[in-house]
Length: 415
Image 1: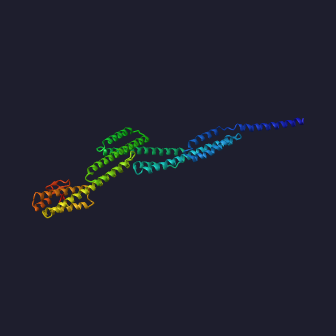
Image 2: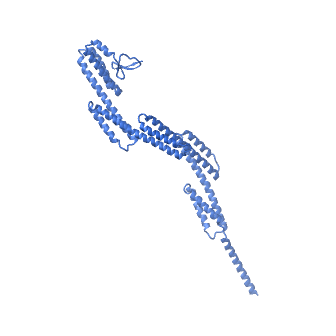
């Protein structure tokens, strides 16, 4: 009997141990990992959305995701461990979202301030609006994700609106500049002016009231490119005209002034060499300036040479009449001296030199007529001395209206 009882007790203890073991196994098998699985999945999705924009926060989240995955993949994990991991995962995501919201908010403010600095001089009105929006957003003290995201969006929208206004202003300025330039070339370059007018009209058509910032920037670029292209064509035309004018002037002086003509020919050749098919607007303008400057210099040299020749001829005639017609010679000497003064003064322009030459020639002609026709010396001298010429070289009896006249080689102002 005792043996049976002992066996029963042993069997009972065995059964209790087996039941306890089965109970433990049942608890382990029944650990619910659904919440943890969901938490890890949501964390991974969120991680993907911030990996590029917020790498620091993403790195922290990666470590927590990996730790929670260890619990998720642990077959021996008890429910309390699983629950703790799920809670910790969700809390980490929440804190990451706040950190990301703070980072995005700070970035939006920083971007707005940087944009403000870039427009404050050129667009003070829009800059003032931008500054006010920044100040308003900076007043928040909340660390709530929702509040931070709201003000980040407010800041982003403000920057977007100001950029739209700036794009509108840029386009308006580009069109205004194009219209102004068109007006400046309309008479001299009608073909290019018409092309530009067409481009302006096209841009105005595309500039609808609901045009986006991106569209406005494209239209502005089209307008700017059109002006640039027209300016290039005008520069090409101006250079061609400058070379043509230089060649025409060369032909007019090559027989009478061979030295200056050769200089001009060299300048023309040099400019033609520099005028390559791919020459930029700036290069073309420089070449045109060089060509214009060369012609101006040669014209000045020719004017000096012509005046020197006129003075030389007058001096020769003066020597021939000095004894026979002293009064006429005396007046002629005064004119020669005045012409020499012009010749030696660098402040006189080409037109001054040309006028002095023409005046010298006219006085010499009058002197020759006075001597040839036998007019008395005193009368001849008086006649020469009292003759007036306007700035176009035309002889006038007396100054009849206000202006500048020449008498005895001296400028006289009549009021």
